[in-house]
Amino acid sequence: MTDQQPETETPPSQEKPKTAKTPPSDTKGPRGGGAGKAAAKAATAKKGATSAARGAAKAKRAGASAPGGRANTKQAKLIAMLRVPEGTTIEQAAKAFGWQPHTVRGAIYGALKKKLGLKVESEKIEGRGRVYRIGS
Image (cartoon, rainbow, N blue to C red; front, side):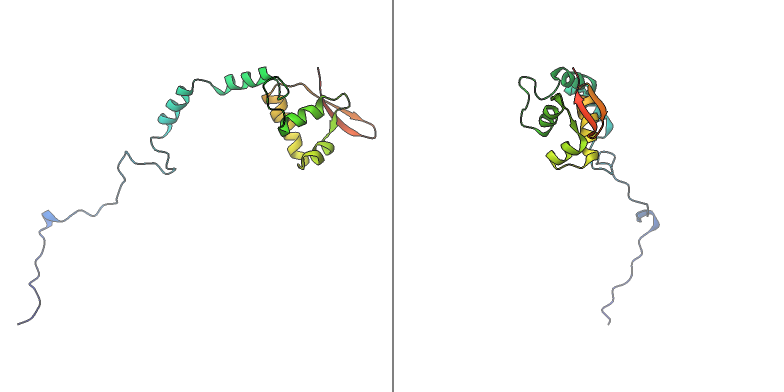
């Protein structure tokens, strides 16, 4: 006698179909974000303030030197450098903060002009180069 068991064949009606696995619809998407755009919109709506409203609030504060603002931030120091009548050059600000010149330009035009709504003036002075200052 042999130790082999008789082969039993599974009837075709009981075999599992070979199909690609698809995840259930309630699982996380490819970015792992959960419910997706609908949840993000709902969360944004709950916050109440739009980016325009937040920008307007920042413009009202008009800089870090306003009462209640942070006085010891790099942005506040840059504003102080630009408020002096002599103004400052990109090179002077870059040296003061240890930044690259493109970072100084980005801070002046992005944070100060666009976000805070400050009036930054630029003037080319002989022997000094381009000087930036905050106008009144």
